[in-house]
Image (cartoon, one colour):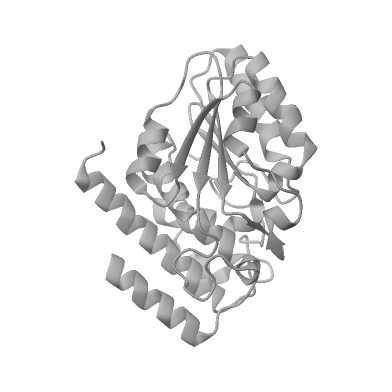
Length: 273
């Protein structure tokens, strides 16, 4: 069990990240649902687990975070800003012409390791980085955050087959299992369940958690690594978490909030913080 003080601190930080996402979603049509579902995971990573240095984002001994589901970029930008990689005020420049905060991650942003957006690419890249670290005897760890709709991509499973072969216990795949993609439920497009069983059959160490229970999230991340093989964390989440009108709906994938919808959501976050 993690101390209540640690869980409380992280939960408050997750609320701050959600507020940024909601506020930006009143100004832009954006991928709010997937950003909200992954907010607790990103909080635990950037504020408790990852070895990173905002003053030196490219330091050689850093941990790598690859947001393979690049459309959830608002959660990444909010976490990086809150962590000190760039001023929080810069979040207001999201998708402005000439700005660095594009609709998907790019290398213009301090702390971003890989430009992502084409789903299925993050894990293969992560495998390559993890292999390189192993060859060099480097201590770096590699975390890849993916969506469950992304599990329909064949390149994910090619990488998943390779990782145990190279005993990549420095590699962690985190699946944001919110059960929705684009304009419909995953089960209505190409079902991917049972995800935990699939990863296990590919010889990964598998952990299933409630991706919104901070104690479970941190406990899973603190259990790593398992010697000799990579780990897959299947995080059960809610698309559009904390915005009542969006939760578990296809609309959550890509939309703009009305001022009334945003106000209701922000009031709810005040109650829970």
